[in-house]
Image (cartoon, helix red, strand yellow):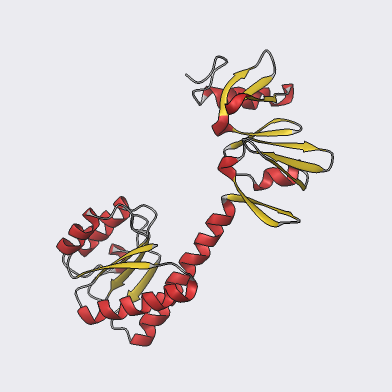
Length: 248
């Protein structure tokens, strides 16, 4: 499901943008598109009061309070993608700002062909970024059964043994041929190296026993801590709620 708001005073433009959006989303994905259509800021406010999530907004900035509405959209929906509709009556300095972070712009007067082109480019870019984000959130393991997508937030720790990397989940373990150095370059920030052979997911740490050189993870899993990486672990403990006795 892709949720969308089109806020434009001109009904002909709204209908055109709706048609082009439906065509573009159908071409790019199998998502169902849910579109809200409003002709004023007041109508838009009433619509978004009922919308917890909003993926996309096409907002006319030249309507009364259009800039204020656009800023409020950005505040309420931090990760939504915005396409702005504007003309020469308003300076670009008012809406092409870091505060608004528009992904695209449609300038009046525009033809049907121009509308289709801008909308197509907008959704193609949106889906490229979504694919990239999904890829970055998972580790892909290839085996005889094909590709396995492992979400990083499901990984407790990673261990290297010989020429193989072992990825430990709560109740499962997967392996692949790769060096620890190659693996570390790909890992997101929640992973911390604690040993020549181990990298842990900090989100699963429950306590650290420096005197025992052990890190305790959830589900009674322990990982060794080497002298070389103690300073990094202490720094992490100091900026988190982890102590030698457990989470504070």
